[in-house]
Image 1: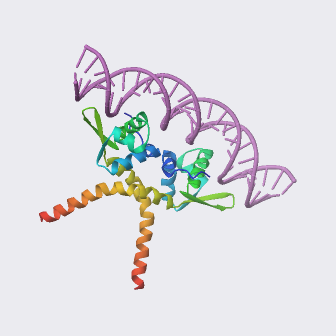
Image 2: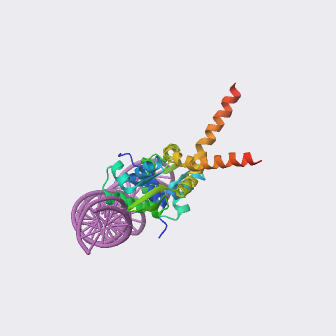
Image 3: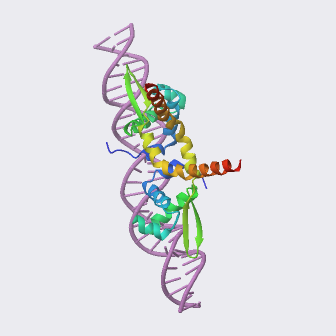
Length: 104
Length: 104
DNA sequence: AGCATGCATTCCTTGACAGGCATATGACCA
DNA sequence: TGGTCATATGCCTGTCAAGGAATGCATGCT
């Protein structure tokens, strides 16, 4: 329960693929993800566990299936770290816009 | 030269600390970073190499010093991946705003 | 009860770093 | 030229995570 680092979780390309797949579909079962991604079932389950423990996905049980869906909160944390860097180029773009506005 | 994954680079907490330090100072030498971060010089140099090869920082030579500064382009790539997820909550916020507007 | 389905977990092996330490490189100076 | 400063690199070791194969564990069905 050691609160895994969100960036470390996203460092795995396979996990980002899982998230990208989930993003396009509201929610999906493990089997659907296995089919869509072409990965082994244990591989998908293990990545889903990492994502779940980091809060990126939530899970509900439907009969023998586990249905996963995205939770945005960890993404907000990542976005929070990224925000000051984003300002480094949006500020420049804003300045450029103001400059172009003055040109007219 | 194997085009390292930007997320994998950011997965290291120490590297994020280096970036956060650089962000507050335009540019800094390796020695300054060593002092500010309290890390060994080889450790800092090795992380800077990773950051440099991934494009997160650029480097200029000033006498015996190497002066590092941030380059925003890899951050833009990361932000690009994050953008659709960000819409998942900004859309909700926008909808909430519209709702509150109608309340008035 | 017995069996199949859907998923999670374990064990094992392998590969990728991270940090410490020592050393190399390159620029400056006397 | 010899020495020093600033930084980069190499080697070594420990740690940790990923994937494959096999197995465990529920739930549902007949």
